[in-house]
Image (tube, rainbow, N blue to C red; front, side, top):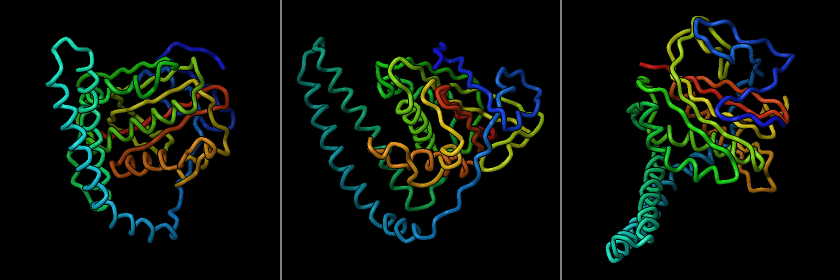
Length: 279
């Protein structure tokens, strides 16, 4: 595996797949070749289970949220009892902050049982929100960097779902990257003059906010790449993998009228590009 400084990641070209079409944008990665990941058909047997889960989720989310309220309340009380210079104040404040974020995630989970209204989000605001927790989420054993271009327009995505997309992609990169590797998250604006290959179908010409998550991890071969968006497909059964992370990313991106490009090669790393149309 080659060691490259983030965020400049380069995956070895895959010889059997057609390259990107040229665009009017200067992009050092336009030479990179992609594997076309086909759409995965829904599994009819899962419909009934999802319906049952949809009925159970509101009650469970309500009970867990009540527990979080108690935890955050006691953490706030303990913070107030400590002297201003006490280093433990920061720890209790972190408990409150993470508890509030968990409450937001519960709101999202509860929303899975109904059709939520899409309010839209800007990627600079998203980076400001998750930027503080991502280094801790990745861990000290990996190099991590994040960049976001200013002034990116509104994308049609619920803010909580946007956080989940980033966390799922970064978590997937973290689990695939050995100690000493690197992960980079980048968001930029792109104007495509011509269509490019992607999932669930070709990325059309137009203006996009592009979220990229790259790693120098183990990478994936063609057989794995063809199945990464399947529900419950995982290569990490022995490590507790559930196979729902990338399937959830695919569902959220498709619901936001977005597109996904995946580039990977064993021992050379992986790069996910998410194209969100900008209104």
